[in-house]
Length: 418
Image 1 (cartoon, one colour):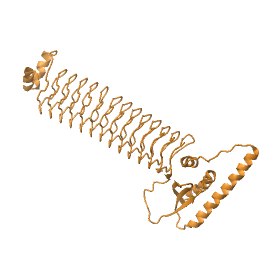
Image 2: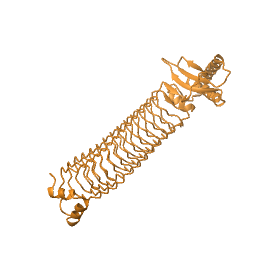
Image 3: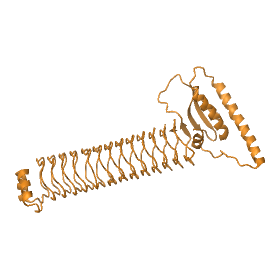
Image 4: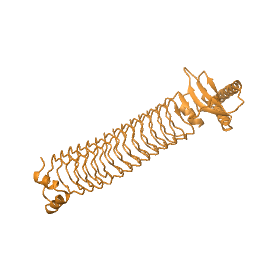
């Protein structure tokens, strides 16, 4: 129960209470369970007070001093804390639903399982703050400073973290579904097993971040920086990584099915045993160190095809046999030359079962002879195959070893001809 004498002083107004606090600064303040709903407490000094279970729903706490307070289970819903100080306090299971918390100081405070649903916290510094298990659903934390903050297992569903600084923050096992992290700084942050489904991470910086086993289905990662990031076993189904920097990233055993990798930089990245089926790789940048060993991929889109035209003409050049990759490389390069000359557009590559490959080609010319093009491609492919057999026979005679493509995957083939 709250101290009745102290409650009487508070009810006389902030001026009377603050004068009491100045006269007796070391008197313990016990306002346990106090009913102060909607009270005007602007500028009040409550430093070190016990407010456990107090009701301050809708209270005016602008410029208030709550440093070092104990506020377990406090009801601060809809309260106005603008310019208040809440440093080194204990707010275990407190409720700040819809509270106004701009320009506050909360360094070193403890917010374990605290509720900040739809609270306004933009621009706030969370230095040394403990937010494990906190509920920040749809809260506004734009441009906030969360460097090295512990948010493990927090609920950040729909939160706005635009341009927030989350360097080295612990976001493991958090729920960031539908969160807005546009232009956020997440360098070296821990996002292990974090749920980022349908989140907006456009232009965010996650360099050297840990997203192992993360859920990122349908997330927007356009122009994101994932350089040297760890995404092993992450799920990136239908994710847009367009124009992203994935250099040196680890995507081993990750799922990137139907992801958009257009104009991405994947030099030195590892996609070992990753699922890349249906990815779009228009204008991507690879190098010899990009690793696609044992990657699964049956279909690759070479163009985004954002605009369809009913007058477009397509052909499918199919090889229904075991693929001679060396011959196909040569034919592919001839197709690329015609693409550069604006005659053809290479649209899609699909592996055929039990063996073979299908290449979808679009004509960019008004005059298009489908049968003639297929015949030319088949002749080139056959001729290159004959040259390969002649070369192999010569090397056997001369005792040389030759580079083979018998185990070349579709992704390694595309890397070689990109």
